[in-house]
Length: 83
Image (cartoon, rainbow, N blue to C red; front, side, top):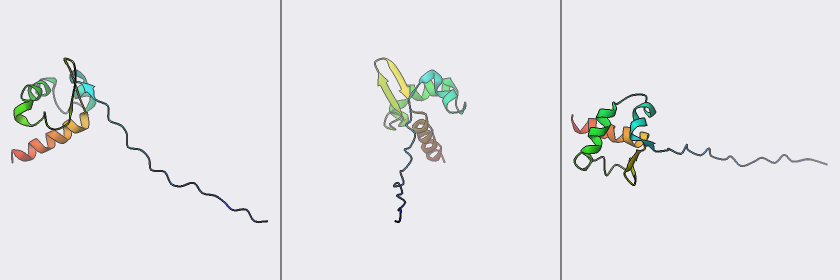
């Protein structure tokens, strides 16, 4: 009698789900890469600087939440535009 060893199919590890954070918590979420004043300025100018179209913002009533990694990706595109 032979026994066969069954192997489980390899499962891909799911990507971590990014959670949006309140504006005041964004600097801590991205290791203080920006100041709260800089974030607020970016939000004030979001229609002109492209932040509104970046997909980094979530509006819940009057509250604005920001996806940290998307915000950093948007910042990368801004630095390339100034060169």
